[in-house]
Image 1 (cartoon, rainbow, N blue to C red):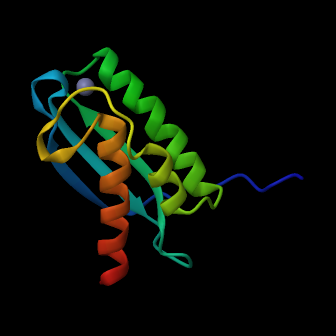
Image 2 (image 1 turned 120 degrees about the vertical axis):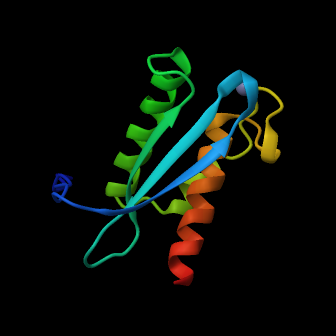
Length: 117
Ligand SMILES: [Zn+2]
């Protein structure tokens, strides 16, 4: 089945959440961008973590590109969050289990917060 490719508008409305992921990973800045018309759900996730150019940052960029694509293809936030939550690498502040787990949790919480407005 041929699907229409998502066309990103010039502007989206977003929220950036800052989360300390401890000495192994550094500070995470996660931006969740929402569609401005029609479906109000998130359509794009951008992340900046730790030192610029690090392997950690490159890996997370790969994950966020796949998360954004999944959102644009209509996969529910709950399914994406469920796939990411519970991935474990090392003990982190804030109860997170890994940067992927933090991404899944923050995406879900951010979306719930957006829906509550
Ligand atoms: Zn870790």
